[in-house]
Length: 89
Image (cartoon, rainbow, N blue to C red; front, side):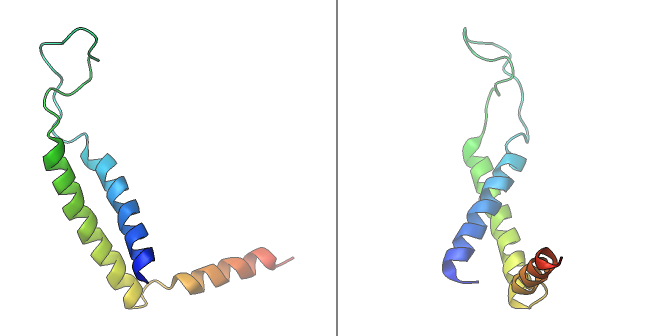
């Protein structure tokens, strides 16, 4: 994995993890401001959620990096197999 692929993989993992972490600990606001959506969280704690997302994404990225470097997952072989299956009559 080169540096560009590593950055793109991290960003994809981070973005996916963000959507998994966002609903954690949300409580609906008790006193609604006019125009506020009823489902809007009272205190969203976004800094904490961004930090958790960053840590989780880093751990998952390291796991992916180890899988690729140890040749446990060989994406080139998988792509070659898929291409061979697509070209069969």
